[in-house]
Length: 339
View 1: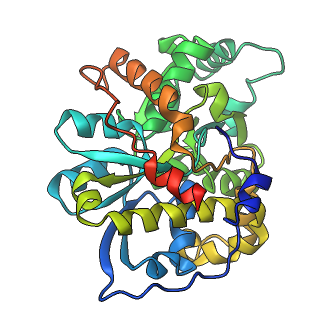
View 2: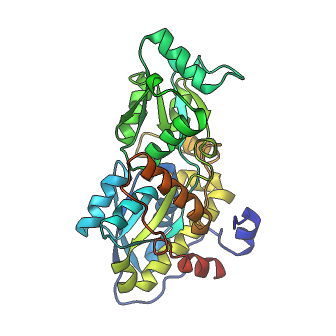
View 3: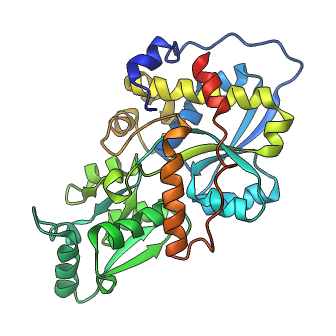
């Protein structure tokens, strides 16, 4: 199911020149909610390159701190498009919010980083659980690890890594929920000992402070970890099927562009993702970081999403498993690739 970079190019998806604008009476408003992380780059790139406008769409992009926060906006009817982790969508469906995952943007994007005080205990060949134990013995307190709220993909990923992979003693670790920006800041200034990050934050903090170390990649924390997805409300899909297709086609094209031409893409993302604080060179490094895995095919995360949902039930993030049969709609992706 993984498409190679070469096959994407052969399919003509990587060309960065804007397509011809199709004739239409008026642009279709599309309200997009995103978490401003690198995995949202395909949406920002599609908007910057004019591909959404060329598809007859008039996008407005609103940023959020976490997926669970965005679910509230979906429930209130103020969003048409959700660009964030897939896990909170199970909660949304359990509340009767009809949304469809139509594309992915990235997988295995949540990684674990530790500040200098904790990182020095992670010695080669030493079990990570023992590193956490030694830190608590030395500091006299458990390691504080920051991540997003319960129910989010980062929170689920961290807990799975700690309890199922590392087999850490719960007395050695305290999980501290907070927003994305707060997590980055807390790790950078040493207010916590470590936590879950995504790019470009990983590149930013490790460059500023070399004592901060990337200790676990996303695939180690949760195998085939489902990452950021593009989901549409069923209401928008029914009301504007052509607009929905235009969004997915643009996203697929953007993912291909990121994989093939990061040097070309990074300056395009500087204004949106950099927000005046991150330069193009840093974004270029983040796009090709081992913590970044861009992929548009939603089919590659179906099984991992089910596995993540089962784990969320076990940790109390979900009351019960929600059938996933209606969550994924891969037809728009398949049409985009076929074109």
